[in-house]
Length: 343
Image 1 (cartoon, rainbow, N blue to C red):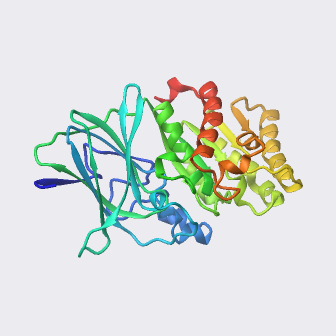
Image 2: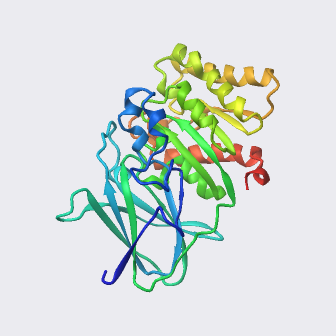
């Protein structure tokens, strides 16, 4: 593409979502470095730099655009799809919902260390666009290139601007989705036109108080506790599952709070015990008078004889598995979120 002009996504009219300190220089983060360094080694050494849930939104009449990304070093601890690891997922947002445009792998630019690019062809006319950052890659910087003379405007705000925060495991982060936009928090965001924060940390979401205190300090519309997977056993999960609820509730006494049990439920003793821990946290909160807390039974997500078909490896959902999760979680959200308060 000739006569291309590059614009940094940290600047207006772009709007950035799901990332910490997006307006500053340095790598894009999901949580502050000072918080990350006090967490377990996997978060401290890199998961906080993974850009899962990060988005940039804008409007343009360009019929072609290029994403130019400076890639930061990262450690990939899980086998994910290449499109999930380091790609851009682009959606066209309309009054009738968001339409998938394309997912593009970022490819290295010859002779430019750590510089990667991908390009998209677009239909004519002005378009409102949302681009998803990689779920498992680390991004130092991002620019978007448009043909000289193309318009560049701000995207309309989300209908519901107070974000839902999803706190959980590699499943929450999106592992095994084919691309970033297929992780269940991303699906729900498009379905409700609602902002969100993805704090899924693959294998490493352990209910650490320093991280919970940080999350409690954010301006949130709702909180989803989905970290059943990352405590080694039911006993360890019981150590702090209710404590996470208490920390969030101290700062957010009125927002909806959702507790989800693990989706890969195989009817063994350990699975029943883990599910019982999550249920007991819910019942304890309910008995304490909280009428804005909800239990979502993960065993219902893939409650069929061929449940393995909805996973990549018996644990991590495929695209179809994530859609099933989004359908059931979304039905609960639709009936319990205080939408007017979240604008």
